[in-house]
Image (cartoon, rainbow, N blue to C red; front, side, top):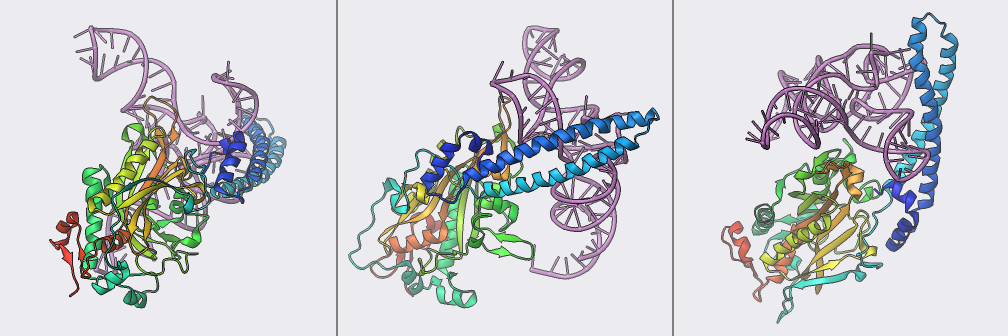
Length: 426
RNA sequence: GGAAAGGUGUCCGAGCGGCUUAAGGAACUGGUCUCGAAAACCAGCGCUCUCUUAUCGGGAGCCGUGGGUUCAAAUCCCACCCUUUCCGCCA
């Protein structure tokens, strides 16, 4: 959520920012008009309340002195009724304004490249060299099926489309990746491991920005109005909702594994084969809470932490700066890490590392108390995948496939795989 | 699912219609004392909105959430949420 005062005072700047995002539906003039209406109502009703309070303070004294208060009481009853009426109007305006504010996206950082789609994202660096195959490289869904690691058909029978059943060494490899990533981030990168609830309430989903705008992308549990987590970002960011954190404790760095559930509404027909786009997938997520001054430096290290996973695995990747058209609702700035995927013959997103600045902190009311006695202030939140596990497994199958149809296991994973060095057709 | 107790500021905790402008601690920030520190003492110290604004200052609201009663609600009533304990069920 943006700062209403900022919209009021820097209207043209914010308008330009929405323009940059290509957000035509955001009606900032309506927000400003409603804000003005709210403040004029407030002035009126607060003046009345002030009078009510003053008179109410007098009543006990008058009674004590034996004065007749029936006339005053009658007047105050009238005033009280008018206050109640106006309070109702204020509440209505407040809630309308809040609903509008919840649907306004974040202001992009000035360094975000201008663009309309992901084609306008800007590559910032590459690591590793994509392999050239002497033969036709197989896609991970074929490799996974042939090696009996992945079973899409039976997953469809058990549940439906866009689910997968991991089998044998496939399940083992998925689990090995989760453990490897968590160990790397907790032991080497200084994150605290968390295992949060996999369902969250509506307030949490609103706090991180999935709601109210993107409810159709979620899986909802109707009995309790809970939501299956679309990413660990939601439960982990919300653990500090409505809290004030001493600056000495910052930055707070958490790493968490969760399955992620997404309905992928509007993605019909895209990436229908394989592990790339599933209703349920595993992910290790990194989340940081920082001061405003350090958040961009922390974003660099967060991104480096995600990249380190791929460096250790030995999979070629690149990092791109996301353009305004591809930025996403909540982010002020975002890097994507993309792995080389031979079957796609291009780089595919495997991690998004975002700085939300104070956008989520405002929604979720997460603040910090400055060391030097300053005013309690909204902190900055960041997060990034470290990494999407299913896509990592897919990248391993494709990048480490051998001419005989087997797949070599990256060295760093072998300890997690009971020493298995290669998965071959039985 | 049933029963009981409870949710108060950064933390602990009192208050249960108008002597509350939310007591009292703790923490924190100044100051006194000290060679220095600790202790002690003195003072300051909540959040949100709003008016006026360079500041100072004024007003309103905030005691789990939302309604209601009343001239007046932390306090009374209703609904809901959460926590703890006990019972039931259960991996």
